[in-house]
View (tube, rainbow, N blue to C red):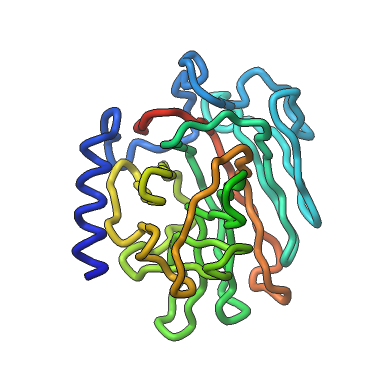
Length: 257
């Protein structure tokens, strides 16, 4: 039933999107996203290199740093670095999010955790009024039983508990620029994800189909979104994590890559 529901969900979301993105088009090159009328946008082009800061967003760190660096062709990107189970997030507050909130970012991760067993990480987190769920549309987990590291939709802090519904159909890729898109749709408490413009029908969640406790999954009225990295267990391999993020955008419609 989950696979049938997920396939239908992906088809509906793709039909409702504002265009598709070509697979493999992600990269550190600037795409002019911030010229558009969006709920939030940051492409880092107008920021100085060095310690990251802006009047448009805040920082949430513990054993981690955020810096603005130059990538190829002179474009600027956000370098996220954490040690062990640290965290480092760019934090967008006071959002007036619509009932359907789309997000997009470009991402390159140097290396993912291979220890401890079931090491769990988050790259995007959304919170707000109306639900205590901390929603994690982009995150993943190291699964020693496969073995492998896989992307998965997840949540914490609410009635559904702490879960990451990782999927073998979505293995991570190291040291490669990719484009991630996601949608949080409060109309039916639905989460879905695209990677390089392609929907993965298994990277979904809804009120009744999710990876947590057997209670309804209810999305908040999002007012805060965090983008970066957090790992929740100590004693990690590797002991340090580096990733680069570019072209972060939040919108009422799908942006494409």
